[in-house]
Length: 143
Image (tube, rainbow, N blue to C red; front, side):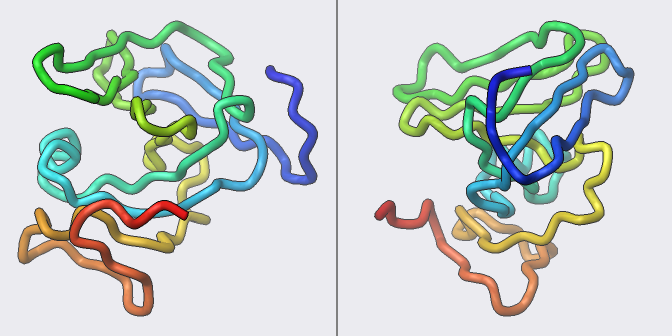
């Protein structure tokens, strides 16, 4: 595991079949749900629930993920997943250092509460957003 000083206990997770395992330490930078079309496609119709985590707080502890990025898109994201069962675990964007960790892969996802909904301009009528969180049609402004 990476050297990372934190007061938070490491959290663990992995893919459906157990071929991939990871540990993440530190508090998430952002907790949210993404409604963009690619996330809907990967999630089977709903939004993807995610935490942004610092790269130095994430370590693969078992297995090596497969990866995929569209080669015909400028600034395409890279998705990391299990080559055996197909579970998507992480996404890396080219325009940010933080990793996008898929909450459903955490061993204890019940503690997750989204703080923001992004790319809501692509949301479907059946997508639910918790009350009292900021909603952005695209990505929120950086600052």
